[in-house]
Structures are given as C-alpha cells and as structure tokens.
Image 1 (cartoon, helix red, strand yellow):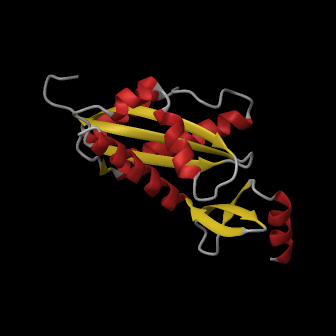
Image 2 (image 1 turned 60 degrees about the vertical axis):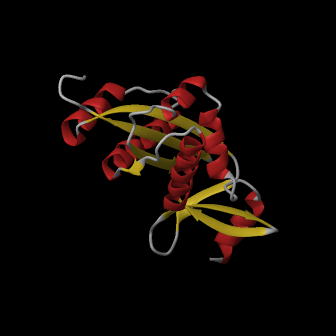
Image 3 (image 1 turned 60 degrees about the horizontal axis):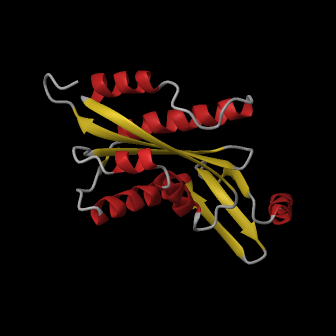
Length: 179
C-alpha cells in the first residue's frame, strides 16, 4: 500500500487508473493537496446530470438513463481506448452501424452518439471537461438538442495512458415506418 501511495504522489496531478477494494474501476487524482477518488459510475452520473441540465436550459425534456445504451457506450469507449493503444485514431465512430442495429433490434431505438476524450488529472472537473469538450462540437450540440430523444447511455473508460474516453448515446424511439 505504501508503494502505491508513493507512486501516486510522484505522479502528482496525472490520472491513475486502478481498482478500489471492491474491484470497482476508479480514477484517482493525487496531489499533495488532494486525495480524492472519483469512481467511473460517479463520473458517468455527473455527465448524465450535465447533459440533462444543458437540455433543460434549451427548453428540452430530460433524458432517461438507459442501461442497454450505457453498455453499448462503454463497449465503444473501450474500443477507442484499445485502438488508441494500438496506434489508431483516438476518436471515431467506427462500428456505429452495428450499434445502431443492436439498439434497433433490442430496444426499438434509433441512436445518435457523441464522443469526448480528455487527458489529465481527474479532480472534480473531469466530467465538466468531458462535457465541455463534446459541447464544443456543433454536430454534438445539435445531437444534444434533438427534440425526440428520450434515452441516454453514458460509457466511460480510462486507459493506462491517462486518457478518459466518453461515449454518450442518445436514443430516439422508433415508430412504425420511420427508419
């Protein structure tokens, strides 16, 4: 345990990815002044809250959490992280058609996705930085403002390279003869 704390203190404000005692993935940020841990589930929840706050500010309804879409989002974030390790692009929508087909067949939803990747420390502001990053994209803002969207899945993965990968998937109900 002392060795881990020493390593964390030496890394200062950089993200350290690991598991806590209950084997839940965590993002740890350690500096001489901060010893807090932000769990992946807390980070996903914060992005969910920020997304709904933004939608409400635009006069839109809030999105309901969707466990199936969250799983698709986590799988895509993990793919982004894995492919970045292999030297491929960090941000892409490859596999979108497969995710669309899964969401249509399993959940009767059409989907739109947003992606954000951030590097750096994970003090309280990491969710805000991820959200601001995807809000800075015109196409992502348009997606967030989709009137018929009803569901949201958020998936976050943290890589050993200190990058935090976020995929958000908005679900739009499929009506007969609509897609």
